[in-house]
Amino acid sequence: MLFIVLIGSVLAITAMVVLNVWLGLSEPARLASLEEAAARLDTDAVGYEAGEGGLLAPDGRFALIPARDGQTIGLLVARGSDFVIRYLGTGSVRSAEADAQGDLLLRLNDFGFAPARLSFGSAETAQSWAGRLNALKG
Image (tube, rainbow, N blue to C red; front, side, top):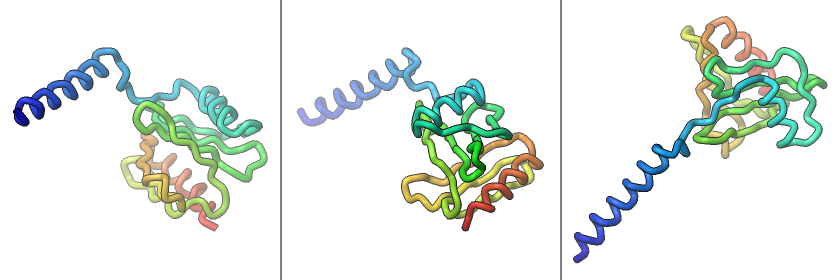
């Protein structure tokens, strides 16, 4: 009897996963533009004014947008079907390490934020942003 309940549970969970995939409910989050990213930042922290020099990932999986006042950088990172948003200021960055493939490994001084691998597509761009982010180590 226990075996039948166990098999039934596995089949039911499998059916729910297949249904989610079929309905498109498990699509990973993507940003279409920097304007969308800036709007999300403003919605999250009312009054956030995006400055110049923001960057949208080639695949839309993250965005970095400096604030107009130059004090913080808004970060949006896709995690599952939504975005994790952080406002990076002095002391918020633990490390930002760029590699030759154009990826950057970002670690924050925030136990709730798992390290993120940001793919810039260009080693030069990754190095540039690593420098900007490491300046926030404080």
